[in-house]
Length: 265
Image (cartoon, rainbow, N blue to C red; front, top):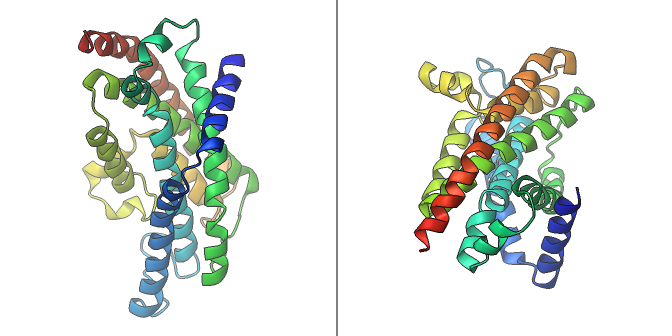
């Protein structure tokens, strides 16, 4: 779409001229530290063994953590770009111009997300060096499943970001909203530990989030040893929830924009 391409190109030009290296390092470091601490705990505390009761045995524990920590920080990065796009326009004083421009909001957000995905992939490739240093290998049981899981995760995060972005501009606040979402996703969606460890109500709540099923597909196709056919029901659930969240977000967004305009007058 022309609007999405133009938005992605504009964002690239702005970032290229003043690339925030410190911000990029700060984004990658939490994942690197999480993986490093898991490696130390695995060897220094666990003696190279972990319990098999939750489906992450010694052979796959570090791979599970590596995939989950990377995916979580990738999720955080996408939310910081996509969900905060409109409130950034609001803070810069350009939201009103954006609202009256003959451009749809969906392609605008898609363009920002496309740039965020590509730039984040480049940044998180640096974690490959950490994997090599620590000797962590991630088995790929199903390449197609891994690709489907990655696409499902990106789509799920985008769907969540649309509604969250509307909430931010309506409230005129970003930090509490985004940090609450980060905590909920990190605790419930099985990024770095199996959801079997959660209380039953928390597991039920996790099933209402599209990122949960997407992470099941990603973990299952990599360290889990499952095929795409076996993961198809979870992939379908993630797609259905993503569509529902996106529809709700797009429905709410015009009301949030109207509220944001009222707050400035």
